[in-house]
Image (cartoon, rainbow, N blue to C red; front, side, top):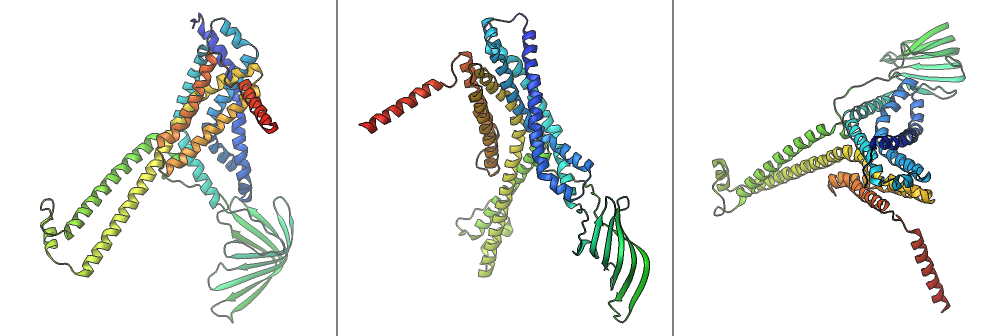
Amino acid sequence: MKPLRNPLILYRYILGEHIGPFFFSISIITLIFLLNLVFRELGRFLSRGLGLGVMFEFFFLNIAWIIALSVPMSVLVATLMAFGRLAGDNEITALKSGGVSILQLLTPILLASALLSLGLIFFNNHILPDFNHRARLLAMDIARKRPTISIEAGVFFHGLKDYSLLVQEIQETPDTSFVKSIFIEDNSKPGSVTTIVADSGKIYFDRTRGLLFFILFHGQIHELDLVKMEDYRILSFPKQILSIPVADWKIQRSESEHRGDREKSAQTMLTDVRRNRLEIEKERKRVNQLASSYIFRYLPLSFRPQIGFTQDQIEYRLKQPLKTQVLSDHVRFKQDIVGARTLIRGLEKQNASLMVEVHKKYSIPVACIIFVLIGAPLGIMGRKGNAAVAAGVSFGFFLLYWAALIGGEELADNQYISPVIAMWGANMLVGLGGIYLVVHSIREATVIDWNRFGRILRSKVKRKSDENIG
């Protein structure tokens, strides 16, 4: 490998070739994730009458986890596009003829991807948890928000607390509804029922005060005392204004100190793991002491140990307990053991989930480096007219990586495999494939000998036909 006289010039050029494709790909991938989120959530948001500000905040908070996933993907796409363009214009060949090796071409990209990985690790530990926490709280607040008031003609509306409403005709305008033949039942006063009927009226909502106003014309108010049924009153009116408070019409922001696994930094989760391990060790010691004390009570006197037990325990053993006492002692011991086992298993499963999230915060950023090892040789393959093959193989690496990551997470959460293997196994598997591609690119060997596969296939087909003829 010949040393470069001015390596910075080449490094700047190689990096410049990646900047445009990287930002293009991250924009497209982020947009795809975001559109999927919009299509999934927009209907629910519109049904609850959320403003544009709240919807924008929700999607903005969810962009954090989208970026955490799209950055490694964009590195692979950018590397594939950049090296494919260089190979297509024969610049790779010209650089090789000038003594520049594949490793020298990869050096600036590997350094840049390493810096990008460090930045993504910082992002995953200090920015992403807060965004995930705020996004979860906002989703809970949205779920509690009251849906928009939708009144239909000829259908009883029970969406207002203590009120029932029925109108026969309704004409909607942007801010006011004009209705005819109105029936309102008011059960807000305990011990009495008020019924209001009117020929016509207007309904509008005051968002500032959270009140639904009814302006009624030509109607009657019927009041019935449920305690004194004979006390019944009727009041006629030419015009009546009624205001009904609408609870939960505005989204109520909540605060919570509790955070899930994806809302914590790696350091916080490691602290939780250590605390759970101490609790597990404490519970195991308690179970061992409980089991020793239980066994000692029912051992023959000649086999009982004399050290480590109190005088009360020894005296208890010397007594002959009743059958009911023995049975109750057995039941209580079994309950203690089952409870302790359930607690230990729960803590161990929680630790497994926490460690999965800890390793994920580092394994996904490191994928930026892994994908460079794949994208560069696959991009160089395009110079021989194999661009479609390279794109297909890169898509296969995508599927392989994410399937291994998701499957590993599921297995590790259920304690079938180690969290280390679950989160780093995909990197190791795809990384070995990337190293294989780089080595073959250095040796200028064909990554996949399609001609050989063609010859083997033709020979098998010919042999099969000969056997059929014979």
